[in-house]
Each structure stands twice: as C-alpha cells, then as structure tokens.
Amino acid sequence: MRGTWVVFGYALRESLRRRVFHAGLVLTVIFLSLYTLGCSFVHIPKATYAGQKVDIYAAAIILGLAVFAVYFFGVSLAIFLTISAVRGDAEQGVLQSLIARPLARWQFLLGRLLAAIAVAVVYVTVVFTASIAITNLTLGWTPRHAFLAGLELSAAIAVVAVVSMLSSVYLSGVANGIGVFMLFGAGLFGGLLGEIGSAVSSHKLEQTATVIRYVTPFEWLYQSSLGRLVQGESGFTKSALRLGPFGGSISGGTTAWLWSVAYVLVVAGVTVLTFSRRDL
Image (cartoon, rainbow, N blue to C red; front, side, top):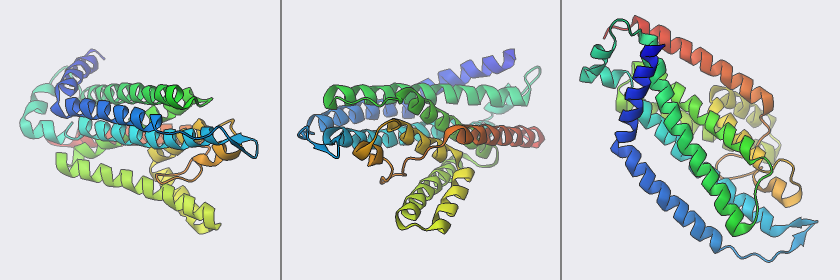
C-alpha cells in the first residue's frame, strides 16, 4: 500500500496547486459573502401559522438553496480533480513513468481517487458548516440533524468522484467532464420529475424518478441530505424543502447508503478491471 500513499501525496499536492482550485476558493468566498448579505436582508416578523414560526420556514428555504450551491460546487470540484486522472496523464506521458514496478495500476487509481475525495469532501464540509453557521447567526435557526445532512452531502461528492474516475479511463478530459456533468444534470432532472409526480399524484413519474435515483445515487444522497435538514420539524418548516427548484427532499435512510456503497464497489471494480487491460 506504500505505492498508493505515494500517489496520494503526489495527487494531493497537484490538486492544491491547480489554478481551478484557487479560483474555486475565491468564488466560494464570494458566495459565502453574498449568502451572508442575503440572509441579513431577510426580515420576517416572528409570526406563527398553524403553530409554526414563519421565519424558521424562510430560513429552511434559504439554507436549502445554499446546500444546493455547496452540492454543485463540490460536484464541480470532484469532476475537475479527476477529469484527466487516467487519459490525461497518459497523453502527457506522466502515467507511463508512474505505472512501473512495484506500483500496481490499482494502487495508482486508488491514490488518485483518495486524493480527489479528500480535497472535495473537506471543501464541502467546510463550506456546508460555514453555511449552517451563517444561517444560525443571521436567521437564528440550525437544523437538528445538520451533521447527518453534511455527511450525506459529502458521500454524494465521493460517489461523483468515483464515477468521474471510471469515465477518465475511457474519455479524454473535456469529454469526461461533459459526460459526468450530463449525468449530474440527469440526476437533477430525476429529482424534478419526482417532485412533479408527487404534486400531481402521477405514479409513473414517481417510478421514473426512482429509476433515475438508482442510476445516480449521488442525487439520492443529496435529496436525503435535504430531508435531514427538516427532519424532526413540522408544519411549514417540514414542507419547505419537500418541493424545491433543485430537487425535493426525501428520506433516503439506510437504503440510499447501502445502494450507494454497492454502486461505488461495482464502479470501482469495473474501473480497475478496465484500466488493467488498457494499453498505455
């Protein structure tokens, strides 16, 4: 496993030196600043409706939008960190010098993947925590299950990184990025179909959304994360994230986790098998 950690260190340093990562940090600071400013402009009377505070309802909606932004940033980062992990390094001649005895190909893949997941997950955790803190300071509300919501959001980013690593074996950088982003968009489309199906009581639309959810488990984990934000709430707050512009909240629970783990194992196995048979 020493070879894996050598590649991990190399990939980690490479990821942190990339200009796209630095640009992402700048954009993140701008996003958090604008989010703080926007939350400070929310002045809703502390009225109640059916026993539920209306200002808490508004806070849940605003935080739900922020979580989508964090999800999108994390997905983008995971894709860019793995976009040329195999084909890109092979075309530049870097891969041939790394894949040599005693370093096995699966060790190279694992090291690159772990580095990408580490950077993306730490980034998502920090930005998600900052969003929760800003919401609490400006609007006076914190989700009861914020930790579990953040955990599922981080897991969703890890699944995207695994999928992007697999496609990097087949596709060049630009094609890989486009393909994974299209899959990400398909997941969002499935979430919207589920919302529409629930609103109009269409069983077929809900079934279609379920199928897409299984194909894109990262979207399933994201929607489950939204569900965690309002878990234990009632009234307006509970319904705040059930229907939204970027995929409604659901209760993923153990099923979402088990399927995501199985999905990752299958994709990782296919990646290793495919890479082991490719000519460099």
